[in-house]
Structures are given as structure tokens and as C-alpha cells.
Amino acid sequence: MVIGCGHKEQNQLSQDSSLTQTKTDSLTSEPIMGRTATNPSNFISTLAPRVSNTALPEDLLLGMRHSDLLLSVNRANRYGCIVQGSEEIWLASYPYTAPLPLLASSEVDYRFPKWSPDGKWIAYVESNTQIIPEDEYFMQFPPSITGTDSVWIIHPDGSEKHRISDMVPSAVFSGITGVDMVCDIITEIEPSIEWSPDGKYIMFVQAWIEENMQWNYTYYLSEVNSGKTKILFTQNKKASILWIPKSTQVLIQGDSEIFTLLDVRGIDQVEIEKIAFKLPNEVSNYISYEFIPSSDENSFYGIFKLKDGNDWTNIYDRALVLNFDLNARQWNSIADIPIELWNRPNVFDNQILICDSTSGEIRILERKSWELSGLIRFSSTFSISPNQCDLQDLKEIHDESGKVWAILDGIQDKTQKGLWAVHLQPTKKAMPQLIFDINSFPENINSISYFAFQP
Image (cartoon, rainbow, N blue to C red; front, side, top):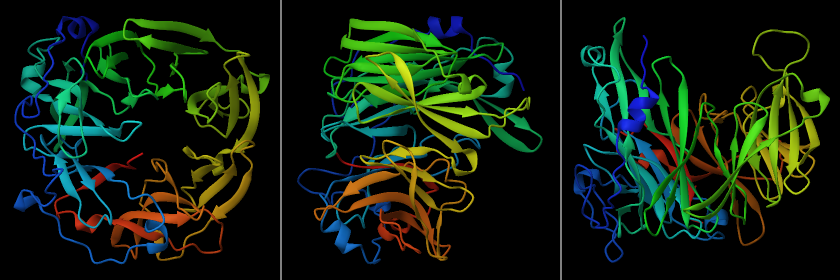
């Protein structure tokens, strides 16, 4: 079924530049903010979760900094169709057995939470998505959109909640395919909202679709202190926002062999440079590429997925890892990885971790060479969450003894879902230790889409 939202419509929807600076003012209704600095038990009783009696990994938790655990939860399958007010943000403090709602409402969705670099703020998207029924959608194009998304920040204790961006249009089209109700996005803020390394700015992306089914992605920059928002540019290539560590530079993947490098010196002092890159001959037949960060502020990694021979399909056979030197403006070859070993890379301080969707193992690669250095094999009673290997966003934790742990989403004995810690020391059969039990949530929680420990 053809849907669309033209560029003209996107421009006609005015951006609301007024800022809401009070804690109690929300777009539609006040969220449930149960955490307080003085009385953590001051919660809505109907949302109070069950306390899990599962033993916690004391050798890890007693040795690590007891940071708050940020969780993005969903009470319904959003795309099957949207259930307004189903997406919430929760926090769990040590020992992580009693998660509590930070932002929850029956009318507003709270999405894509991100800690600030200093751990003092949480940024998120507050969404009042408009659902446009099928009969209304085809009566007028472009449709009149009244729904909005906007970026907000809040302290972990629930205080000083306020909006720091303009409002952008947010709408989905709802219709019936066969016997199923479906929702297709027309326009919304994408999951990739990113803090600058110094915490002064937030970049985010609005996705919107034209009548010809062409997707567009508009990049915004918001200044946290003033709430001033600036539109930077629009492109038709979906790409993540990559802030170069310890710098003012931002990297955006381009439409072809060009990427955009931004230098953010101020909200009105953003230099935008288009850089065309030259690749080694062996990358001439690449299908797609993506950028991921390195620990060096003067470089980043490029992952190029390739196919061998003249196969016309978009099935790739291997991935070539290159490192781009921002000073020399050139690529350096790092590794050539067979695709059966390939999945989403997670960059740790000294290692690269890749979840193998076929075997359910965690592959450990050397940080500089990307050469395979070890495997994490799990016991037969433990498994990575089904269909989640591609999406695993592994987190790294160091305890006081110097051990390095990876935090992942998994299942024990086919029933116990949670976040687990595994020591990054290859063994024949690793037994992860439970960090957080999802069963401690109320029963109507559908999924956890994001988790992160406070920096």
C-alpha cells in the first residue's frame, strides 16, 4: 500500500521554538515520575514491580561502581499497530532487583533514552504520534499532521524535566492488510539521538517519506543549555550519528562514496564538509558500508560488506574492515572477515566482540588487528535471546580487580530472561551471571529495547 509524506509537507509544519522549562509541563499529560532524591519508595502502587529473589553475581557487582541501570521498555508490540503510551523509561539502582518507572504515561510514549557523558542527565524522545486512519489518509495528500516528537532531558531522580529541541512532525498510517492491522511510519524521530562528548549538544534525525516512496533523513542539532535547534541538512541515506571521541567533529555516512564531516564549534558555528573517499581496489564491489567509532579521536572504522564474483543479488560474502585517518584523509586496511563470522561489531576498549547468530557464541577479536583471539561458548542451558544476535548492543564493565565483563541480553533454562554478565576470558563453557531479571517487571511488559549503565 502506497504511503507518503512529501518534503513540502515537512517544511510546512512549523517548528515550535518555545521551550517548556518546568518539570510538570508535558505535551499531553504528566508522566509518572516515581524516583525522587529523598524517597525512592514514593511510587504509584499499581506499577510497583515484584522483587526478584535471584542470587546476584557478587564477585562482579560488589567490585563495580554501583551505577543506575537505564531501561527502555515496551508494553506492546509497537509496529503491530502502535499502542499509544506503551513505551516507557525505567531505572534500576543497585542491586537491580526492583526497577522503577522514571517516565510512563497512558497517552505519551517515551523512547530512545541516552545517558549524558557525565551521567547527570538522561536524554529521550517524547512522542505524541498521530495515527492517521486509512479512510482519512487517502482523502488528502499530503495529510495534515498534528502529531509531534521532541527531545527532552531529565535528571535520574526525576527532577528538572524540560524540552531541549523544537517539535518535529510524527505520524503513522494505519490500514488493514488481509486480516491484520498494520502501521507504516510517515515521519518520526529516529532512535539515533546522540550527545556530544562534552555534553553541550544533542544531534538527532527525523525520518520522513515522500509520495514517491523516497525516504529522507533530516539532521538536527540542539544546544542543551538554550534549547535552540538548528536544521543541518537532509539526505536520502539512513546513517547513524558518530561523534568522534574527545572532539567537536561528527561523522555522517553519505549517499555514495561521500561522507559528511561536521565540526560543531557552536549552535550557529557548524562547518559542514563533504569528503569523497578513495577505496582500495578490493572494495570496488561493495554492497553497503557503515562507520563505527575507534578509541582514537583522529580516526574511525569503516565496515564494507562485499560480494565475490558477479552475483547480481544483494547477498554479501565477507566484510572488509578499514580505518580512516582523519589527518591523512586516507583508508588503511585492517582485516578481511568471512561473512559467516560476521555480525554487528561491539567496540570495547581493547577488544571487538561479535555475536555469532549461527552458533550463539561471542567471538573476541583483537582491538587493533581485528584478528580472532577467542570464543565465549555458553552452557547448553543458556542462549542469546532469539533473533537478537544481530541487535545485541553489548556493554563493557570493568570491576575493581581489573576483570572485563560483557553485559548481554539472554535466556537461562528457556524461561529466565534478563541481562547477564560474562567474563571475557574464553572458556569451554561459560555460565553468565544474572545482573537484572526481566521477571522483576510487571507481567505486561513486552520487551526491553535498550539498556545502559550510568557513565
